[in-house]
Image (cartoon, rainbow, N blue to C red):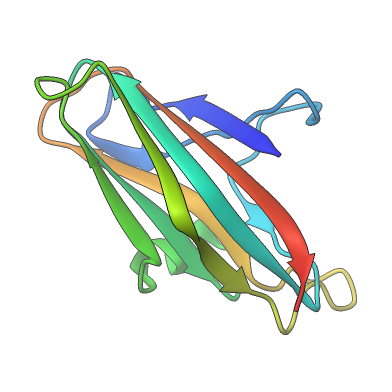
Length: 133
């Protein structure tokens, strides 16, 4: 599945609202189903200002908790170096879910956090799949 979204050009930090052809509306979090793992195979970035994108991971649906949790991976985009930075990963980033959704309470979730030194509109795109553990 490919998800993508923009940064907010009115702030210097935030969460990427992710959308896809398979989603009806943009989402801030992707919850990994119980007993599955998310494999991230590719990341693409573009935009006008230097931006740090972080794959945030947490065992809750609260963005504040995920924002302070340890990041699985950090990607830095510099527009002076490339107009579009593809990052096809030879080995995927694997994020397992042991708890998943239990009794309608979200378990492990992933979000894309971003930060910039100056405000600007950038874009983030990610290819991933869910696989059994």
